[in-house]
Length: 186
Image (cartoon, rainbow, N blue to C red):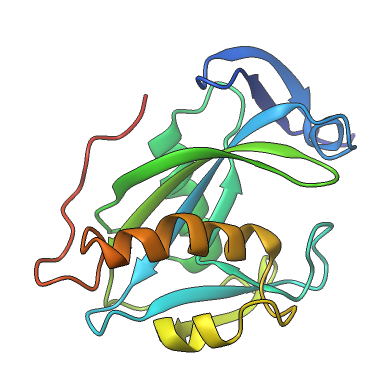
């Protein structure tokens, strides 16, 4: 018997208005569903990126946000963030700080993205079933490779609209003071 994953269908304010299967959410019907992203910085200000598995149905083999995953139906946002971080990278102890949320739309799906950051110096063990690896990238190295089909469109958009803007305002690592955990959205 096949297990069916269900995601909440939400309105633009993040309120659950229904539920749908993973397949329904990725079939092109643009059901708005929530996801979590975690940007992991090291003390040098480099950003960890994951290399998506070639087995992924969306953007296989591209470099992407350190952690990205769906929120399951009836799952709190922080629980999903911690679950995805543990499953994808083997990281259990970290301090997430909420940055923002926004809506991302592609040809096949529409996501309400909850964006978090953390500074982390421990071991990172990418799950070979989920990822084809990962490493820290310098910010300038990321900028110089934008638009060259190395990164997912989601990552490029988020980097330009969220990460770069916050770095320029010194609200995001690397700044003189590492980020502290912010209030988490409910």
